[in-house]
Image (cartoon, rainbow, N blue to C red; front, side):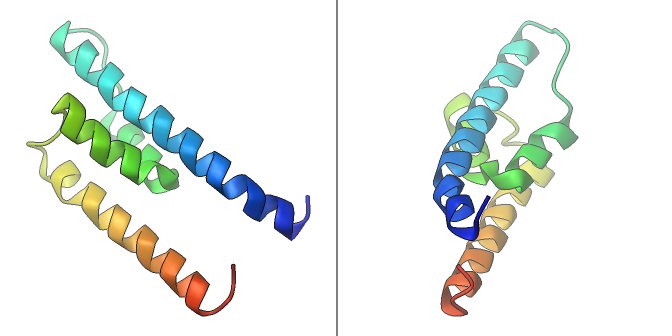
Length: 96
């Protein structure tokens, strides 16, 4: 795969990972209400780190899930800020 095809796939990947992350936060909230097996917090945060940070943040707001946990309340916005800083840096240096 060439460099340009990877860049063309980035928006598709980001959309997919954010939709999956958003749905996983909703699924975990549903599981919590039913007192069933839960998704590990580390897995939810990993999805945010892998590019699903906007989906995680939206999922927290829409589903009212993990909003009382400091590692999510402060961690997810911190991940978003770092990811945006990386994108800005890459744009400024003409890396992408």
